[in-house]
Image (cartoon, rainbow, N blue to C red; front, side, top):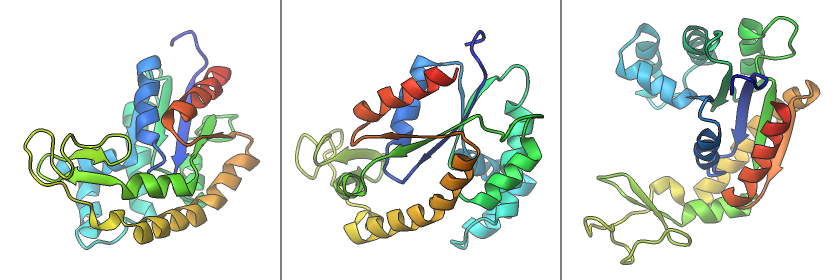
Length: 227
């Protein structure tokens, strides 16, 4: 990818939209892209018991949200240390920012000279809410291993049983239609101003579809046109 234009990509998408799936497929096509998940960064800092990790743990252990100032510093410090350098020209970030104030702080800290934003492309993965609700409410999990099944497109060989151990599968408590719908409504309300922020900067694109097989080629086309 060294001959390509640098890619600084933010992926947006509701819970259950398939961001993880399309990211995995994208990295197979472009292995030179460095993928960063804000959730993974936070968990790593907590596991390593760094100063900021312990500060974040003080909130997560109580079921509270990590304050903007803490999560923003975590992302900025990690990007500065590991990502924004001549050796890493192509990267994507998932899970942050979630609102305009975070985006503004991130841009203020890391925006390259002469650029509109730290990102040069923001792509929203748009999947119909009804599809996401159906997808998540059909999810079943083998708790000890974390293996995940879907009653529609990845069912267990024996209904209700894990393929490997034969133990019972369960539905997560927060995978009910009521809770999933609330989470999606909350997400949409939160992300709407953020999408406007990036739309006004002229860097927001949207790819729509009901499955990753539909979404991924569209995402790939957007990225190829950019780089």
